[in-house]
Length: 138
Image 1 (spheres, helix red, strand yellow):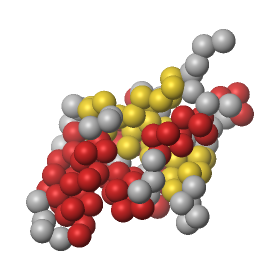
Image 2 (cartoon, rainbow, N blue to C red):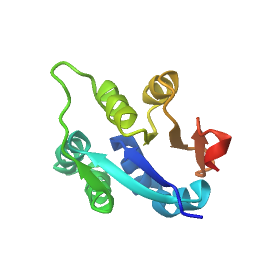
Image 3 (cartoon, rainbow, N blue to C red):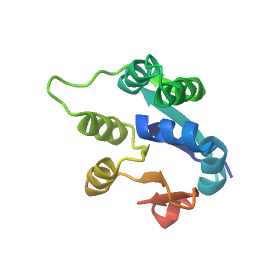
Image 4 (cartoon, rainbow, N blue to C red):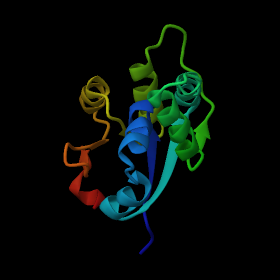
């Protein structure tokens, strides 16, 4: 039996959480989903991390680490549409590729779940939680 390949779109908040809390979501997600995962980082996320990484602050250093983590992901060159919010952009991209969104942003989580998009997030105990995966997936 072959492995499923899950496409996981990672947003800025998730990459920052990985850098701040030293969480290896790459390895954890493979265990949780029991399949191969293609991690995707949108161009807008890379630009935002670069902007934050230019600051000479603790957050800037964490963004710099988050950028290094993003190097393990496949970049997505698709741009947001004019006037499109970041959350709408990430929701649209994830929906187009029938993927899962990985975020620490509560509003994006709600928006994705309302659009029937599965969501991965980090719980307060630093373990991953996944919402919206059908039982047939696992």
